[in-house]
Amino acid sequence: MRCPFCAHEDSQVKDSRPTEDGASIRRRRQCEDCGARFTTFERVQLRELTVVKSENRREPFDRMKLERSVSTALRKRPVAQERIDKLLSSIQRQLETSGESEVAASTIGEMVMNGLKALDTVAYIRFASVYKDFREAKDFEDFAVTVGEAARE
Ligand SMILES: [Zn+2]
Image 1 (cartoon, helix red, strand yellow):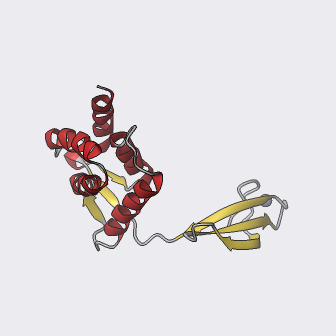
Image 2 (cartoon, rainbow, N blue to C red):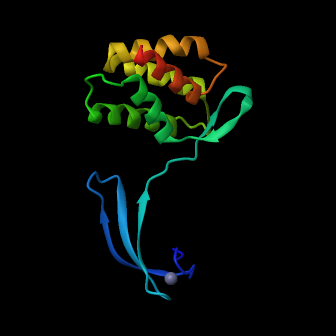
């Protein structure tokens, strides 16, 4: 691993241990040249996933973005963060194991909708009412904004 401080090509692993949730490995490293210490995280990535949006625009799948959409729909709803994380992980896992390298934004939208249905009716309705109008035309970001507005009404 290249040193982020002096760009030297090699660093030594000083310590290596799983993070609390066991989903990644945390490594303490030290640069062999300048001696700087830094940390890296290693986690499983089953495949690179590209989201196909309206007008054929493409972007890498971004879990944070998905999380923002879901959180917006769930704003002020009594749903534990743990259950939200579970939903997000389940969607991500389905996408990663689907065998496809590209997925339509609308497919993700359907998955979110189904997940929310089981989680919280109000969030589901918020999400679904916006989603039906926007289906093919808009992307998640427009979507999140609109759901946010609906939530404030
Ligand atoms: Zn260095």
